[in-house]
Amino acid sequence: QDVAGNAARLSSANGVNPSGILVVDTTPPGLSSLRLGTNDGLLGSGEPVDLLVTFTEPVSVSGTVSVGLNNGGVAKYASGSGSGTLVFNYVPLAGQETPDIKTAASASLSGVVRDLAGNLVSQGIVDNIDPAGVLAVDLTAPGVLSVNYGANDGLLAVGEHLTLYVRFGEPVVVQGTPKLALQNGGAANYLSGSGTDTLAFDYVPATGQDTGDLALASSL
Image (tube, rainbow, N blue to C red; front, side, top):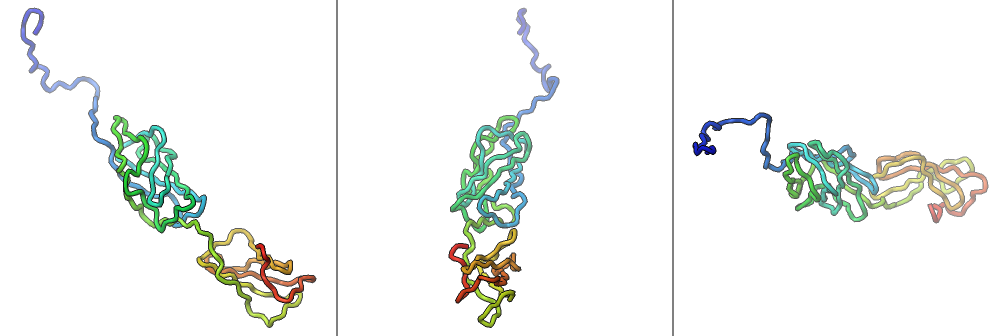
C-alpha cells in the first residue's frame, strides 16, 4: 500500500517484461561429440594426438583440465576455452599400450569446465567413450626374428652383390637411408621392404673386407 493506506494493485504488473533480456540458465552443458584429431591409426612413443570434445554450448575452462583415458594416459587441455569445442592433447608414455584408445570408465573429465552461466559440466560427461575409428598405442620396438642371405654360391668377390634380408616381428617403416654394419667393416645399404615385416639390404664387398664367414657387426 501507499503511505495513505491504499492497497497496491499488483495485478497491473501481470505479464510485464522489463526492458532488456535476462536469461535464466540452470542446465549444465551436454556433450555433442568426442573425436580424435588427425592420426594414422597407430601412436608410437612421443607421438601426439588431439582429442576434441564438443559441447552443446560454449564453455570456459578454469585451472588444470584433462581427460583420463582407458590406458591410464591423460589428455591435457590445450585450447578452446570460450568456444563450444575444447582441444586436449595426448602423448603416450611407457606402459600405456592399448589396441584402441577410449576415455576412462568413470570421472574421466578432471578440472573445472562450466558454461557461460556458471553451470558445471559433469565429470562423467565423457566417460567410457570410444571415438570413431581405431587408434592403437604401440610402444614396443620391433624385434628381429631372422637375418638371412639371399642367393649366393658361398663365396663373394670384390664387386659382387649380396642381398641380406632382415625379418621383424611386425611391419616396419623406413625413414632416411639405414645401413647394416658388418663384422668385416663393410656395410649393407637399404634396398626395399618399407611397410612390410622384411627389409632387404645390399652388400658389395670392398678390398680389405675379407672374412671367413660374413656376419653382422656386434653393435649395429
